[in-house]
Length: 477
Ligand code: ADP
Ligand code: MG
Image (tube, rainbow, N blue to C red; front, side):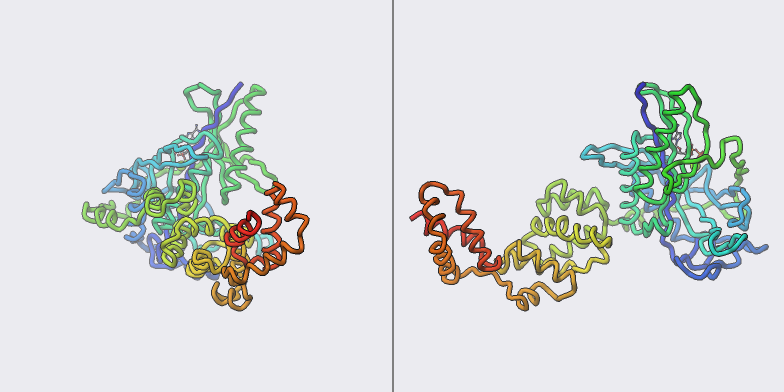
């Protein structure tokens, strides 16, 4: 039988506010345990939550960016469960009336566009962390993260493969970075997702029973976890069994999913509106103010790159995949406005390869946008060839200075002076009379050989175009 995969994602996105969603404690990552947990975060009796306006604005920003309905009145609910890292005994979340309602986002899978429905995005607080490693036979509790604002972005079950799920996740990741509402750091847990996965016979309308996969903290693991879970479900169904609805944990070391709890064991959260928090009401004015603050979004920026810089779809999409990369590119173009395409080649080529090799982000690039622009300018004005430019690029990467400094120091200036190149050509022709004979006898492919010899003799510094022209002139006469 042919099977179809159905996937819906729930993404927890930490909002980049300075303080927590219901208290004034700092949200900065990496502090000593429990130094950023105030009375509200540790649930001292008698404390009251106060909503952080900035968190609400960020949620609205997201909603507007995905064309969602903004609920101008939304309600906070208590989601009750017991866990050591949740001292209140409940998490403040939104159930019936989330701040962001239905929206959509377009993903691109191998050049094909697909629209994915967003069901909702609600505001909630993060829990603390249990630390198992440093305490023998005990568990430590760090409440620094307790109360960090999140939006949980829930998708429709619209994805049909792990590849689509990853594309969706990357698109949302890029968007929240563009909007500057989340730092996107997956290692630190600022952006994490649960994947709901089911399979059904191809052509069947009803969805199959789903499993919810937890604990997936990288793009690569999302793909692997879904693929392995789909395999598991198909195996069960093909051997006549039934998939049970449950929560499963992905173990990246073993590349397997295993049951955490079934639906029967699932918590009854006993949601009810939090009596300590009033309804949140957003005026039209506030929403319009936020709309006016929206930055240029990835799709619009991509289109503009194609129009303004005459880039290919591929180049523009690659360069706008993250806001930082797009900013870098535009800063480099500013340094050399006449060569947007050549700069795109360098950013997507040599620079991307170097970052990948050294496992660096664009924001940590050892070659600044300015320096790259200056380097490309030296190719553009024929000071150096593209080939020599790669050597110069490496040197800039290694901190040896600017393009001009390196070209000067290493004596890499291209030789573009006919009177300097001609004697070298004459010498090479004289020393290779056999090949000259063959060339004149009709083997014109040998031109490449002569060019190679001249480039070698000049350590790659001769202007290749000129070498070609001069050689032709001499050999064809
Ligand atoms: P819950 O309240 O248990 O989290 P929801 O109805 O909110 O359940 O759905 C959570 C996620 O599961 C959503 O992203 C939704 O798209 C997805 N989902 C629902 N049904 C299925 C299914 N049969 N297969 C795959 N994903 C599903
Ligand atoms: Mg849910």
